[in-house]
Amino acid sequence: MPPRRRPQANVPPPQQKAPRQSKLAKENAITATEESEIKEAFSLFSQLSVEIDAKESIIPTSSIRRALTALGTPPSSTSELQEILETVDPDGSGEVGYEHFVAIAALKLKSRSDESKREEVAKAFDLFTGRSGGGGEGKITLGALKRVARELKEDVNEQVLKDMIQEANGGGGIHKGVELEEFEEVMRRAGAFT
Image (cartoon, rainbow, N blue to C red):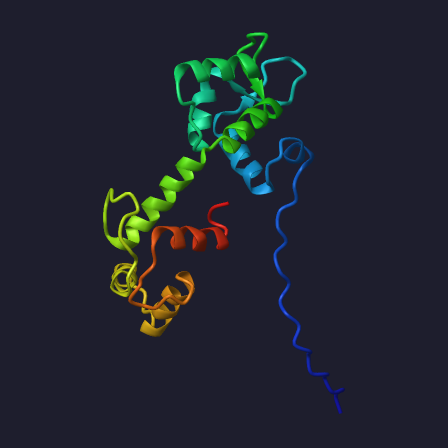
């Protein structure tokens, strides 16, 4: 007779660990996710250094603007780009190493203004309210949520949509809708904006 198998205990599946911060990420006060975004932007334009013994990847200074643009943090002006180039390549070699690029990219990521984040929230809000260029005016209503679900071809129960509105507006009622400030708070809680 074969041995009996023990019933397995309800063991939750292992959770994926968040990527660990590297020493370089810690030094520049960025998350591991931000560092991976920076690394991806760097790798788009990197090449091996022309020095004989160097095995380090570099990026030509002529590609700094494009790399920062790929990261979503383009220089705001020609003078800012010139200042960045003078910072990362003070000797004028025409090459920038990964560590220097991370430092400048981290500064650019951190300098995203609160206003630009607010504009992003307003644009997302406008997608729900159906107003293009509305600047975050209006309210997200039950009808608007139904429209978005229909456009996304999602079959969402009406009660779930009502609950979403109630959660977002603090129990103010379904007919009250969701205003921009409430939507922004929901986005913060969801981790979309800090």
